[in-house]
Image 1 (cartoon, rainbow, N blue to C red):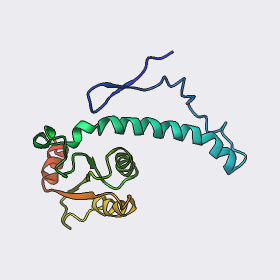
Image 2: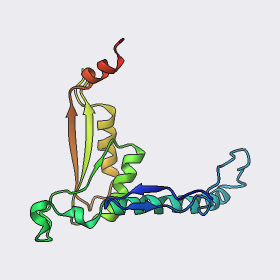
Image 3: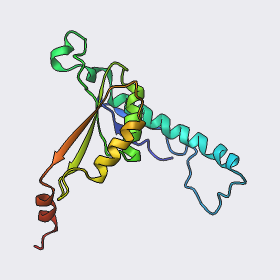
Amino acid sequence: MSSNPALLAGDGEPLQLQDFDDLNMAPIDSAAVQPESVESAAEWWIPHCDTLLSLLGEATRRRANPNSYFCQACHSRRKSCGKAHVAVMFSGGIDSTMLAYLSDLHVPRDQPIDLLNVAFETSGGFDVPDRQTGRKALKELDHSREWNFVEVPYTHFEEIYCSFNSPA
């Protein structure tokens, strides 16, 4: 039996995950998994997807804990100033879009969420693939939530890139 892996939650407490043996998630032998139909494949995958979604949801919930909804000035009043207190680094890829979706489930509806989209300046400016996919993915998120798509320009990419890739 392996030890329980732990992730740090937003409140600093370890987030205990079940033992992988208990999750029934043995490594997959792709040659052995030959579903007879789409329905049988779905029957096999759905419990595993539900478990993963549950674990990711709990991790997100704990990181977006209610104490983070108040800035220092508003904390004593226990009333939010309306500014976003939760942010997601958002490229528009499947991972950041999933984190935005999970944040939407666990942050009160009246609280905005910032989506931070970093773009490295190129000769064509800042309209790079991550900026484009970020804008597209934003349109797919729940429109009843206030999402703040924050475009973060980064102009020193070439300086950093060259320092790592120059001959010694």
